[in-house]
Amino acid sequence: MNIPQGKKIYFSSDNHLGAPNADESLPREKVFVKWLDTVKDDAEAIFLLGDLFDFWFEYRQVIPKGFVRVLGKLAELSDSGIPIYYFVGNHDLWMDDYFKKELNIPVFHKPQEFTLGNKLFFIGHGDGLGPGDKGYKRMKKVFTNPFCKWLFRWLHPDLGVRLAKHLSVKNKLISGDEDVNFLGEENEWLAQYSKRKLENKHFDYFIFGHRHFPMEIKVGENSTYFNLGDWITHFTYGVFDGERFLLEKFE
Image 1: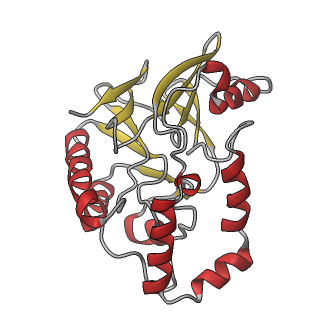
Image 2: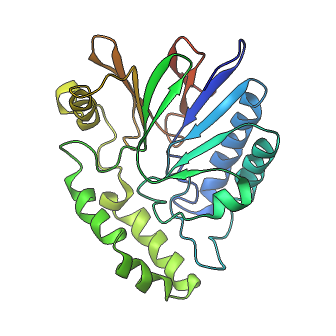
Image 3: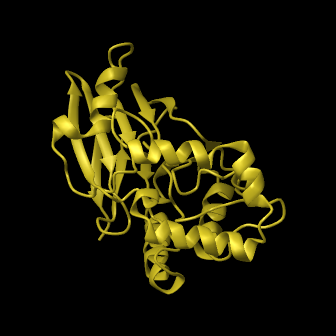
């Protein structure tokens, strides 16, 4: 993807809209929509790295109630010609084709390689990668099991969504927020994962979410791992201008 002069590529993750409840989530949703309005003038593309919602499940005829402001803004930006790419996280891994059909936003269920400018990026949400995150890795096998998904689909949406929201908010293991502090470079499993990827192929940047903590770690002589933080505590995001990748905070 070429980056014209004056244009930038933006990265965001972990909004968890809907948590802990609709009333408390709404101000954060409005802040995020304001950020989207701020970046749209010079955005060459926008990457959303998962967990935009604290829970998302696509029934055949139903999606979770709410989020009209952010969905409307994403539709506006997509319709204006700004490419938007979505990577599912551990809270929205049941996303199917709604974003693609309604918003023209492709959805990725695994990390992907992108060449942006003259830099090679490895991009994903970050859940289930590396030597850590063992609790979630066990849970993910259940969440992605086709039979379990089929069973859940047969729950009435009022019951299914209510149950899922309760588990998401109450169970820190499912929410993925058991570690929201810097663990040290030697203990950051996504940094370790990045170093292992470099054994087979060079990447200039590894960009992940999931950890809810903004960080920048050198993982090779010319390779850096960035974590985008979140829109709950830090309100941080990534921006690439074709030359440098920076973490910035939305005030």
